[in-house]
Image (cartoon, rainbow, N blue to C red; front, side, top):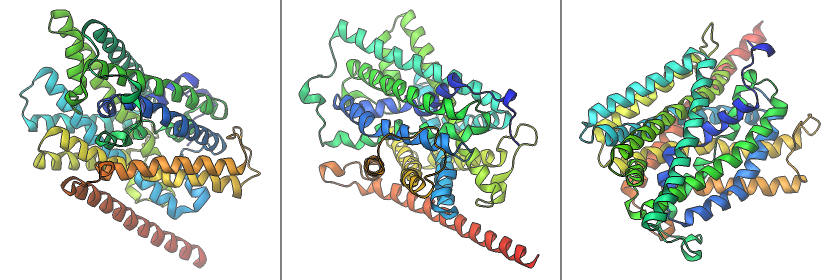
Length: 469
């Protein structure tokens, strides 16, 4: 059921804020800052060589094929339903696997702010409550979800501006915590590169807006503009926020979970005003975590629902709210998987930074897999459907498109490898970390193949029934 033009909610401002909220993740700033001053250079390299071409490709695909399936629909058109099923499975299930990492960080930051001695299982309860609050928001209506997304985007911008401005102000008064020079900012292959895939991860998601096709007033005009505006805003904010953290905190003291709170406490001090600011900005930061998961759940579960309604994912995923037309089946399953991972985390939790990173890296590897199919889909559709109207086209000949896609695939591939083997740049592998992450990825891929096998069987049954009729 389509939304009529008069009821469509999302114009250029909403689309831009949706993309900003989807891509801009405050929880990844501490990981990128952990690379050190060279992270600034890596941000700029990634912007020029990856983000710009990726945004242009997303704009062409999103305006040429403005269906709610988004990346699923593009891969299906290019390579058939088998690869589309794999793509949708990875794209959807990664949200359920990523959600625990985000809410584990939420609970750890909440405890750091308000209850430093909070029991682990109380933090687990917070994670579970947030998971089901996310599911409820995404089930209620698109209006509610868009409101949360827009507010979350504004909060993210505010938090990062505070970190950036506060870091520069702190350094002016107390000295710069890390050396910023040509030597320290030059890209280098060292242990800090283990966090480099976070930069790529933090800049993915511009294609997500295409899954909201029925809610967009003028997708052909507004989608390209929103993606390019959001790309510029997001990269600039990431660089500014990273500089702020590095101005205030030495690299060795940046914690993955508590790093933002540590920075806020350092910036504003222990006075009454300082404590108020720490709590105020800390609360806004926590709100951005919820908004981020609402954004991704809204987009990924819609793509999964469309695939399930086409018989390419299990039937429960296809369930749609009769009034709000929201993907309640996919949303609830997302909540169940996230809850299971959170409870497993509670049983095996050790040092919070290590556990956060393990879950984050595992879910991120799954998240990156669909892009291995998306970029070649751009080439395939250019070649197989040259006569389809393209309201927006990536500039350059087909040879230029090949080069662009190859570069984008290189960025994705190196991110996957470094998420699994973060110590590879310095020549050693910590199998106590890499083995569980690898096993998790293999199991998730295996489940996807089992789901694909079920889809093939259903398709054969349906074709057999059609032949009999």
